[in-house]
Image (cartoon, rainbow, N blue to C red):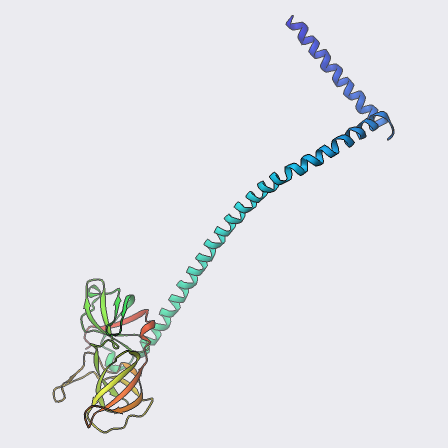
Length: 286
C-alpha cells in the first residue's frame, strides 16, 4: 500500500515537471498575443491593484520600522559624536593648561632672576580652593610641608607677589592673599623711593595701599613697588618676604591720617581672581 502511494506521488511529480517544461517552452515560442501571454497579462491586471493596495496598507508599518532604525542609528552617532567632542575638548584643555604652566614658569623665572631671590627654593603648586569674601581672601594649594613648604613662605606668580603661607598640612597649605585684611608687607618704591607697608583696600581687590611713608618724597604715577625684604628695629618695620618681588604700580598719592604720612594707591600686578598656579619661595634663602 505504501509503495503504491510513493509511486503515485512520483508519477504526479513527473507529470507536473513535464507540464511546467511544456508551458515554459510554449510561452517562449508563442507570440505576444498567444493564450499563455494573455493569461499572464490577465492575472497581472487582477493582482496589480491588490499589490498596490497591500503596499499602501503596509507603508506606515515600513515607515515606522525605518524611523526606529534611523532614530537608533542617529542616536548612536550622536552619542559617539558627543564622546569625540568631549575627548577633543579635554585634549584642548590639557594643552591649554600645559601652555599656561609653561608661560607661568617662564614668567616666574624672570621674577626670581633677581639676586635677592637666588637662594630660595621654588615649589610649584596648583590652587585647589578659594575663599574670596570681603574680609577673608585666601587660597588653598595642593602642596604642603612634605614639599618643604613652611608657614610665612612667600607665594608668587609670574606677575608678582600673591601672599604668604599661613597654615599647612603634609599635602596642602593655605595662602593669605595680599588683599586679605590681615595681610601686610613692607615695600619700597623704585628707584630709591620711600619705604612703607602695603595692605589691602577694603572691598576693592584691585587696589592696595602703601602707607606709613615717613618723608615727603614724591611718588610718581606708574612707578613700580616691590617688597622691601628687611627688618628695621628703628621703625619697627619687618618683612616676611624676600626683597625685590614685584607688587604693583603706584597710581595715586593721598594724604594719610598723620601730618607727614602719605598713602599711595597701588594697582597690583596679580589678578587675584584668576590664579590657578602659584610658586612658593621656601628654604629661607642663603
